[in-house]
Length: 139
Image (cartoon, rainbow, N blue to C red; front, side, top):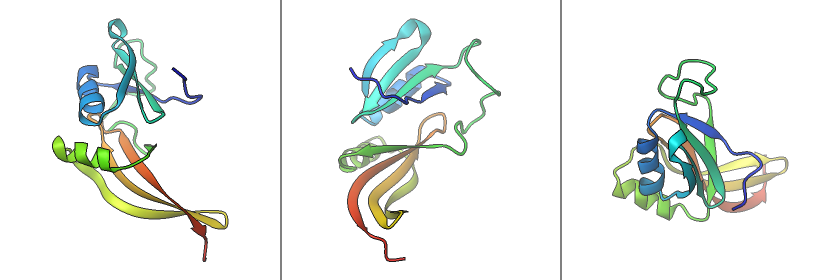
């Protein structure tokens, strides 16, 4: 397995609930876990997260309050949103932001994506994106 050079580690309130949400509900892959540490590394099409349940020696800068990760969203590029959308429907998950086409300016170009956002059980925002292509910026 290849490890990304940047892999967010999220402290979660219940590792079993997070496992259910990410692995079963969304279809992430469990790459490995250390059950004795209530830790797991998961991936989805090359994106990776480390998840660890709260504990007394965790690197917590402040008492965790729901929703966790305020001001942060994790952009996860996927080959197709259809699988994620099907999982959201199958498990009756709630959208934070429903599917939308968006074009972002990058210098003199625009990059298009279809994107949607959902929250995990601890309130972390996951932004799934499907790439649509590029076009000239018309200003």
